[in-house]
Amino acid sequence: MAKKKINIILLIIVIGLWGSVTYRFAKPYFIANDIGTIAKSAPTYSDTKMPFKDTFEMKTIQRDPFLNRLVNNPTVSKVKYPLKTGSPILKKEPTVKKPVPFIEYYGYIKSGSGQGKELIMIKNNGVLFKLKLGEEREGLKVLKIFKDSVQFSFNKEKYFVRKK
Image (tube, rainbow, N blue to C red; front, side):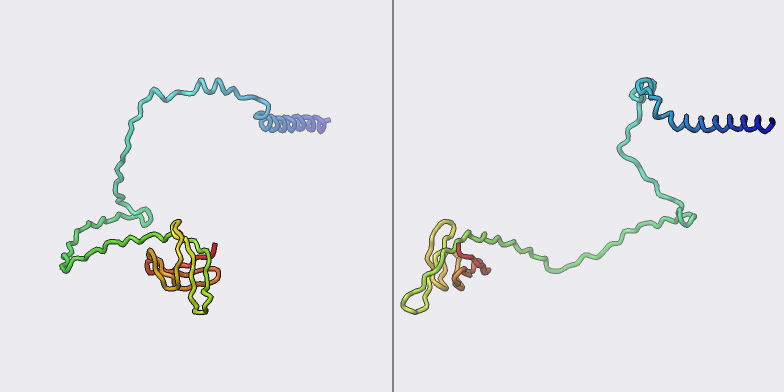
């Protein structure tokens, strides 16, 4: 009979413990928080005046945090360097290069007399030209002529243009 009473008391204690654990776990899911009362009871900070500083001053650290000893701040001394005398450096003015003209290559015509003279047809900025090998016009000089392209120089630079 005594054993039965102890078992009943222990069962009531275990049920009570597990009930409190379950209650604490399930409480946030079933009880709604009243947000309206929390917001109304929160203090407002608009009435308090806070000082506004847009700058601050950092003080020098007197103690080294890693070595745990005082630091001796060395003083900065200004060193005067002697002036260099000599000829002034002249600056070159930058040269402005002409932009490469828009060129369209339309092909070439070989002379029928077998002299090897070839005549090419190009369009430079909307104007049609007929040029021979080695001829120069408006800064364009024909260097080499191929079936599908032509090599020319402009401002001492070489360019290739493919047939249109």
